[in-house]
Amino acid sequence: MTSRTFGILSPFVGGDYYGAIIEGVNAAAVAGGDRVMAVQTLDPGSHSADRSGLPAFARPVAQGLLSGLVVLPGAVPESYAVEARRAGLPVVFVAQEAVESGASAVLADNRSGVRAAVAHLIEHGHERIAFAGYLAHFDLRERHEGYREGLLAHGITPRADLLFDTGDNHESGGAAVADTLIRSGMPATAIVLGTDRNAIGLIDRMTAAGYDLPRELAVVGFDDIADASYLRPALSSVRQPLDRVGAAVYGLLDELVADPGMPAEVRQVATEFTPRESCGCPHAGPAVSEPHTRALFDQVRYLQSTLNIQYELGIALLGRHTYDPRALDWLGSTPALAGCLGLWTAENDHLELAGEYRVTAGAPYAEMSVTAFPPPELFGVADGADGDVVFVVPVRSPARDWGMLAAVGRIQSTTPPGREMMNHSGSLLTKALDYQVTMAALREQEERLRTAAMRDHLTGLPNRLLLEDRLARAGMRATRDPSFRFAVLLLDLDRFKAVNDTLGHAAGDLLLIEMAHRLTSRLRRSDTVARLGGDEFVVLIDGLTDPDSYKTVCAALQAAVCEPMEIDGHTVEVGVSIGVAVSQPGASDPDRMLREADAAMYRAKSATRGH
Image (cartoon, rainbow, N blue to C red; front, top):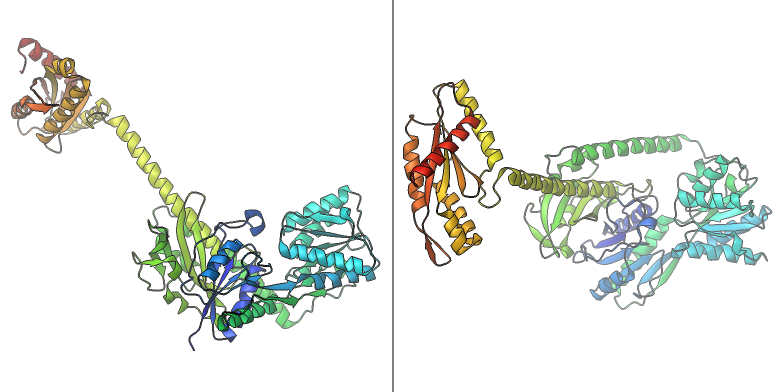
């Protein structure tokens, strides 16, 4: 039987919430002979899903490769699922109902675990029990409903002044609630928080303010993350078994694939309350055993490895300014087994494979539709049974949407969401590409400014500033080498004013541009033609073969200038008067030579034009 691929859309593709769900779905898929891939929908480098808002993610990434789609909370708008189902993909939402799309969903039964927690607090003698959570999220509203049901089941009316919105699911939200409780004179004796990280923030702030927990405030969290049992006091928490959630998601998808006509269904997975010290229960302490100690040691080593990876990534992508990050060899600094980079083409619905790592997928220049990305070669590298899956992260910044980075790596389910390798790698890669563009633009601007400062804006010839630099170089060479000779020719066009007066300044500009072209074409690459302004040009003959060889150059330049030219249907003829100064051994001051050439030109012009 050919294995099927199921896509998981998630704000982040790792962390102790999203990563744990991906891990659960992957384990069930591998057991069923299938595989998963995970797509991050938030921009790389996003701090948190709560503060970033709903991602503006609309591209049908990999949909031509998928047999079904899983949507984690806050990953995409429901309209994305509508389009996916219209394209024939079964869709299952996790921890959120799908009213608009009519898709199936798997929900953790948030209410049952919270009801049990409230009942437990009441057994400890509490009646003034508060609730705090980020109520913008569906599952947090469900937890609040479980809190209300738990109070009402014991004849306690929920109080509006004991309901707090944390504004996020992180420590900062819990700390803000702690400040509010302290300012209000501690109206509650116990509190249930929507997430463990909210609870950790509250405990830290209350303890720092001198409160004795749980004597002055009993605390219950939700999620039962790894940190919970190691806090002091150890955090009582409601556990949602994400492994069972993942298994339920895969089971439902399997049924939907087998029966496309199956009606939408919502399945629930029970949550479990785990009492510890923070609710007032006596300290039991974590079991200390050799396997447990080894597991903790492995976590410490993992964190050290993560810090090293992040440091090396930063150096590889941001520390080498001449390095092209598209090459992807920097992935060797990470645990990634393989990877490829696709950059958007002009059509914006196809990706050009710009780089690859430990896989041959056709880079560079091969193109593929976004529905076929990532290349199938990556799936051959992933060992789902060992926890390796294909991840895809956008390469996008506020300045530019570059494309997609795909990599094969281990599911990271112990870090906070957003701290996993893919989010970090995508962020640094985006910044490196943005930096390249910025530096190229700055170099281009610098060159334009340099050109504007050193060139005549009309003809593009060197101006007085650049001419002086080249004259100085010629003078220094003549000082070092007495046999080296150079000549300065100052040219003034005859009858140029008549052209301006009769045909206009635009015609005069065209004539000057043509003269610049003619003069340049008659000289060597080592010589210089400069425009000083008006109808005056200067020629530097850099290296005379003999003291009189400038005369041949003067004759060629006079012939070139005097050739008739057509301007706006009129035949125009001008002449030129030339003043010459030739360097002498030991007397080659460029400024003096320019003055002498200028004086010679005026003598020629006053004697007979065209000399």
